Length: 124
Image 1 (cartoon, rainbow, N blue to C red):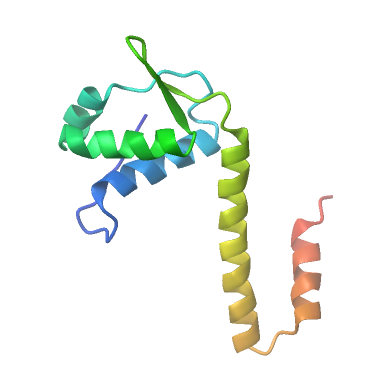
Image 2 (image 1 turned 60 degrees about the vertical axis):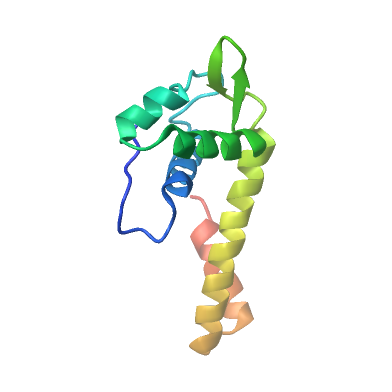
């Protein structure tokens, strides 16, 4: 599991960790049931405080992406499919909103935008 932190990002470090782990889970890079590094190991690897990794793990756990089993460790949740679907739906909505705003600013009609979406999503 690779996580890259940027001191130039406007996102706090724990949010950078959360978003990258979510992305790896959603892309299938991290699989259901796969063991996650302990909070201490992740903190050491990333050169951040354990409090930072704990906050990231707490957010991921709250959102259903990971599950911690006492005395066993932390694992990618096997019941995260609904969360993944909802997270991806939010991303799609955000991107479609941006596309609609850009289209409106440039005089592209709703019908033309729908046709473009049909062309883009048509599989051959």
